[in-house]
Image (cartoon, rainbow, N blue to C red):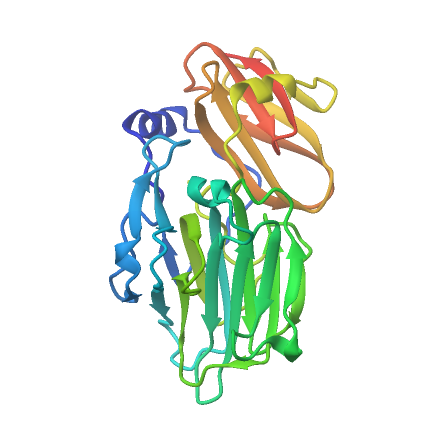
Length: 338
């Protein structure tokens, strides 16, 4: 689980707000890494010179949350990665990996043409294993087999809108078949094949692979499921506290106050509120509750929902008296009073 500040932990316990009518998956992730410390213990380990330019830093947006920062603008020709060795199946052929990432401030400010924001490489196992490399540069996500074995002789590219903010990537790999989903939307942004090979690799890597390129990015967490490919809404649920969305300022939320888009009753609330809203598309429904200062109190709902109208009951009996803002999918908000 991600770490939170002492006050936020207390609010989680005190508020006691949970989604009541959507069942959780009983499946569990093979590996959950909140990146509160450098990933250097089995099945994770460091490779090359990664520790030289990698560190754990406080999240500037979320008190108590930590991030892995991989940042190299030294102009020294060097590479470095963290490696995760597949745990359950030695000759793994099928895997699902999720991670949340954004560029570092140095990378966003870099004047060069093509700083690297992240590099992630999945390599299945066995004597003939396939390799998928994902690299994010300015507005462009590239899927390649590797530098030596691009898929079909040509990389696959996707234009990522607003790469400067946090995004969640879900990568599924079934031997040659690779799909990449952005921000838990139901349709993949990349759906193709890789022809790169790396016999006996049995792992995946994160870090800096391009020796002569500036590199800078934050990673918030990784989730790994070995042996199955799961699209958004399938398989184990994203754990509570593993954020998918970008933090939103209180002023932006106030501007999204839209009584017509959200119906909340009773308001003022008693021991619960009933929330009705329309999910515009199949995908993640994210409901956040903020106090009047703009501090996020809790995210009671972070689930995959089908397109259409939904009604959800949220308990509020342990909230202290006051004014709160309830935000739906970062698009609409309503004030509620307790």
